[in-house]
Image (cartoon, rainbow, N blue to C red; front, side, top):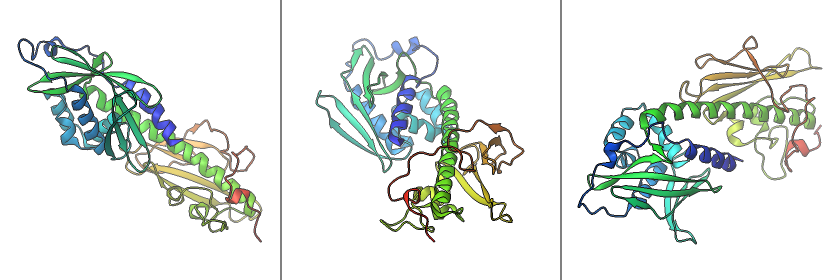
Length: 329
């Protein structure tokens, strides 16, 4: 699922990569005349993608025009990282690997422990000091990366038909990353709620902590290790958000309930809104500058499997999890 989401986001990022300006005439006028322009634009683009993959800010800056390089270095750290992540379609620093595909195209792969992004670079179209390199990513999306030859090297100027403008892109990408992380946090709250309900059905009670929902050794599912969620979810830290689980109404053993909350790990960088899944199954969301949300905060629509009474349908349980195990006495 993560890889599919990354591919979808990657296609959207390539289609919306640049700002709003047309290529300025000043770029078209440079390096013309009798100067011999080497046709190595794909190598320069591959090097820029490799630097972005490694999250090498200095290396990436070498392939930006002078104005864009200055603008890039002037960005806050989180926005510089956002530009590199969007450009390489990789959330974490990776290892760039170069090879060729069956069509003879140069291929740049950005590999890390979570996923792999892949770029297939086609034959460039060169006109005076401009080159346009067609790039295909997983899923078949193709976009032309434009480069201009300046001071003896190729510099990025566009994706598609519009200019690669760091000042315009950085703030927009930073906001999009916040939106993506907040959407993911809501999804994880729903997954945690589903896991809690699976645990309740399997063992007849609520778990005492998220840790009890976590991974178990093979064939050793128990109330202490129910094998319902991943290890990072079990420690309550996923995708730039911190998650907390609390059992409430403990004074009434016949109808215990629970609440789940999520707050940004670093407010303003990994998210802004805080979320609460309350004991009645309602989802609340608000920007509290990193503080937890509460039940008086605005309610947002809930997706399936988000009520805490177990009434909503849950996805099929994974084999070897508490959801498919018999309750233990």
